[in-house]
Amino acid sequence: MKSITRQKPLEEIEQQLEGLERAYIIGCGTCTTMTKTGGREEVLDMKERLQGLGKMVTGWTVIPIACDEMTEASLKENDGAIRSADCLLVMSCALGVQKAGSYSGKPVIPALDTLFIGVEDKPGYFHEVCDQCGHCVLGYTAGICPITACHKGLLNGPCGGTNNGKCEIDKEKDCAWTLIYQRLKAQDRLDLMRKYQPPKNSQVIPRPRLARIL
Ligand code: SF4
Ligand code: SF4
Image 1 (cartoon, protein in one colour):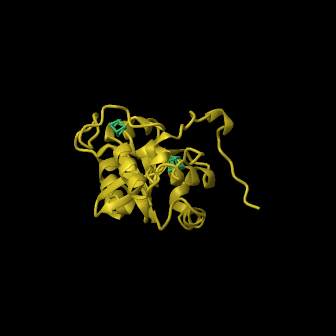
Image 2 (cartoon, rainbow, N blue to C red):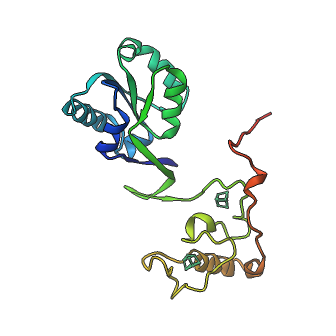
């Protein structure tokens, strides 16, 4: 599982940096290194691009796992360079940005957009498997998530547009509900196709979601 991210356009990063002339850059040694959006190479490239915009880079680091407790220790190690910066430009997923923000009084600027949590199908190809909806229906759908795998996120499918097993919205993509049907059929559990799934009640789980592990 990896946080899938995409680098923001340089113009947007420049806008966020308005009035902030000195930046300290933070990358992540895990997800954004793997997705080539915030590893060592991309951090050094960003350093050059910021300098090209006339910004000063006071230092940089690639934290092994930017979304966990190592962030605090790593920021302490680099305290001098961070203190002389106006802001932290963070090239990790949003979790790492929030961690960096909580451990430093400096403004944090995300250089990336966090897209989804994905698994790797083959080198370089990731797909979303779970939207963390709070009420899992995989037990009724043969282990295939209708929220992430179906283009319309239908809890009760198929939609009627499925054609020869392909999705009407993207003909390159298998229809999720055809896959669910085929797998349920192989498991001799086709009766589950008729089970009605009521709409999810998002109000049941107010944001932010919290968990207490006893
Ligand atoms: S139904 Fe889909 S989105 Fe919801 S928890 Fe299960 S896998 Fe995740
Ligand atoms: S064709 Fe299948 S995957 Fe596409 S929107 Fe309809 S049910 Fe969902």
